[in-house]
Image 1 (cartoon, each protein chain N blue to C red):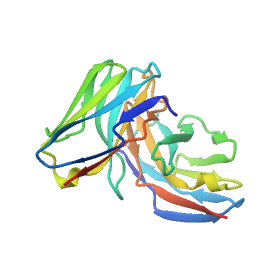
Image 2 (image 1 turned 180 degrees about the vertical axis):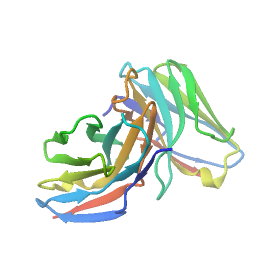
Image 3 (image 1 turned 120 degrees about the vertical axis):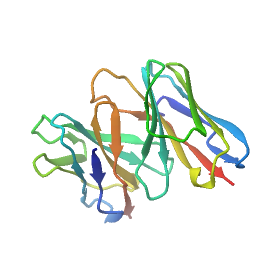
Image 4 (image 1 turned 60 degrees about the vertical axis):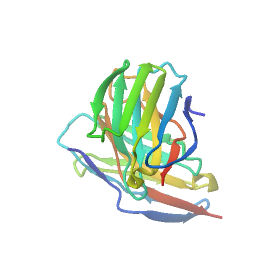
Length: 114
Length: 112
């Protein structure tokens, strides 16, 4: 266990559904991230939060809406997704203050959009 | 923009043998960090080893070591005495600032 917990592990949703992915870190870190991992593509950074403030939005469509209520929790709200959004969504956390801090990852949510 | 390239989509090695995974990157930065992450079937990304660009000495972590060639922008991972548990997807990653950029990954299979 890395101290980063993601729920649910698997999610199947229709294009008209609204769902949320949850991430919780128990490491006392001050930064949290959402990554998208599609087959045969590099991991794509979606969002970065530092001390609950969004510091990076990597041109992500508005059908993905992140929320960071505190430094330990991160959500990704999903609505009107497309089949091409099917992927593994990984959450990570780190202690920011330099650039060599390693990221701790969760096990991801495998999302299938029908 | 930084890019990370892993030219070997798949590799295999016999148990107890040595294997090297290649990684090249492109950047105009001078200070940065390089990482190798492992993703087993459990899907959890696990840090294997990291290298600071300002250090000339290659990082070593037990059976894992890197060959860091800064001028060539090359960062290969050597796994010695391969074990069945090393079977996983391996990702090379580059970090400058808050952004961590990953390569496409190399699927390594260790055969008994």
